[in-house]
Figure 1 (cartoon, one colour):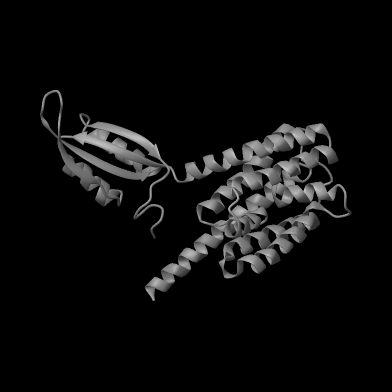
Figure 2 (tube, helix red, strand yellow):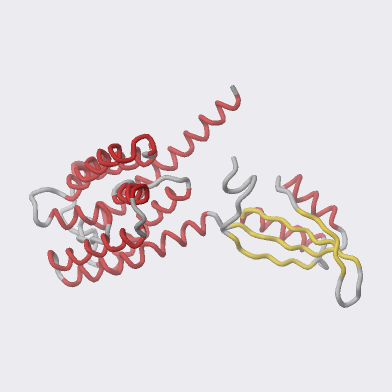
Length: 288
């Protein structure tokens, strides 16, 4: 019973995070991307270009393309098709369509295209990073990537980049040079922002503590911070005196507490703190 309730709680937390991330994506796309005709890849980029040549809004085209891709995904991928990807894709499509009805935008929010480009990059990239971090995606061209991964040996990243680049080139032909160049900048910056956001979300602090009295520090780590540590004996190279080395890994907020505790109670201890965003193990990524 407790196990099932824990699983339900985790599922609710995941879908709450997905909902918030999708709403951020909708705001970034609808408020900043669509009005400026920014077309740096993905389904929304295709929708922006098509809306200039067919009598339909970008939100409606996004909905149609996403529904077609979902059908294709179910046909080719079957049960391996992610439920969370379907949820995000449906929610994003519905959100964009409703935004066009409830908050119609006839022109850009400001007269600063560079400022709007920054938000058009950062908000969707931040949203995508949150989704990727919990094993979900925004659907769209990610569905094509799943199909390519299953049935071909193509370099998926390279193939999707070429598709996105084609969308940018099309925007240069359909719109003006400024819009095309902004879209190209958005394409180049998008992946960098996603990578940096994921790294920031998962950032942990790796402590190497060399001290004479390890017990108080270990007690603080285990009892106050609810973390663990690895302890082993060592010998100083200069004076050949016995030392204890403590290895501990924790989140950033916990790291501040540990650093302040050691400075206050054992000022002679030597502390080396490094950043790491790839911690896999119990209490971190890969374990419940």
